[in-house]
Amino acid sequence: MDTLLKPLQELSEKFRSLDGVGKKSAIRMAFSVLNMSEEDAVTFAQAILNAKTQIKLCKKCQSISVSELCPICESDTRDHSVVCVVEDAQSVMALEKVKEYNGVYHVLGGVISPMKGIGPEKLKIKELLERINTEDIAEVIVATNPTVEGEATAMYVSRLLKPFEIKVTRIANGLPVGADLEYADAVTLYRAIQGRREI
Image 1 (cartoon, rainbow, N blue to C red):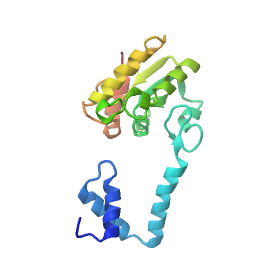
Image 2 (cartoon, rainbow, N blue to C red):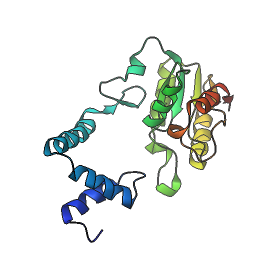
Image 3 (cartoon, one colour):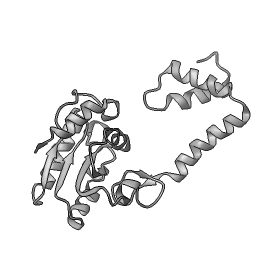
Image 4 (cartoon, rainbow, N blue to C red):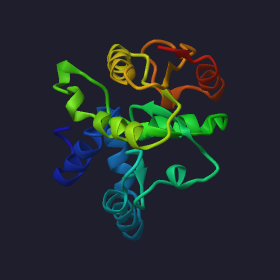
């Protein structure tokens, strides 16, 4: 890194700060930007700013949206009585690829992780409970990732939902432990949804 010119080094460090980007990939991305025309570089920078300023949270499900409600929550063809609880917007996108789930979603915005200082109060759990109190929900599918934190979050959410007279299910373990929903193939996700169980 010491051999890079300062502006290139700074750009590389910004790319490296992104999830899953290592040192070599960050340098490669920085050089890709350097090789762009000035017009393309401006368009690239503008796309980042547009995403940051125009995308917000859906008022109802807490997923990403460009308006007050996301297209899924606005849809009258979706089954609003079934809510699939996921960790993040990437999980919504992954499940939507399956094209077999017709309910709606609720995005927690992460998982309970004491090691990272993330407690239940930092997640969108209160908003989920408000939805259950105000909407006609028959089933909640808990679809957090099958990691230690994802399982702990699923158990916490299921315990909170026990007093409500609704069906609470957990997606089946068609997903390997430690896997993320966004990297799973459509068949695995379909089996996981179809094989969900009550918790």
